[in-house]
Length: 162
Image 1 (spheres, rainbow, N blue to C red):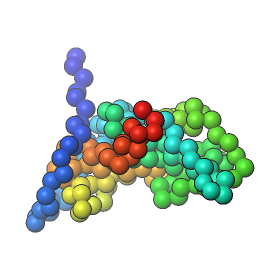
Image 2 (image 1 turned 135 degrees about the vertical axis):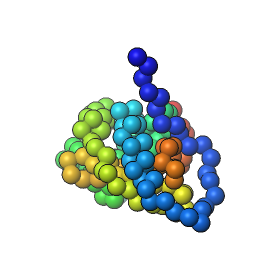
Image 3 (image 1 turned 180 degrees about the vertical axis):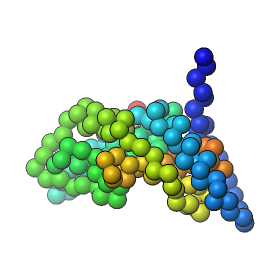
Image 4 (image 1 turned 30 degrees about the vertical axis):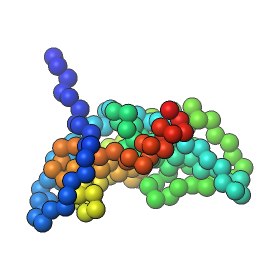
């Protein structure tokens, strides 16, 4: 039996459109569901700020591209909700432990059957939740067929980690 091929990664930005088809959100959600088993926690991005604060993000990788980053809370040792990057003082983290925690969270995460439309990218942003909190968004092309990487994050990873 041949495994289904994973959804492709979008390579080129498209021009805006004058019409809008909200039914395509269903296809976008299904595309993210199909890709979810292939998402992996990348090497944690651990930074120290000028006041000694620690900030940890973990890129979510798909076919060698970063899709989004998951904020990590060093105090609780768990993912933090999207929009809540944690700045921590007086704690240390082990990158392998952080990666393991996020990898497990990705296994438990589920796709929310809804999306927001982002006009500048002409794309859907499909939320992914873990234990009732949204931890990431996956961008999908307007037609619902292609995953759109976070190109800036992908370049950051390639510069500093790969």
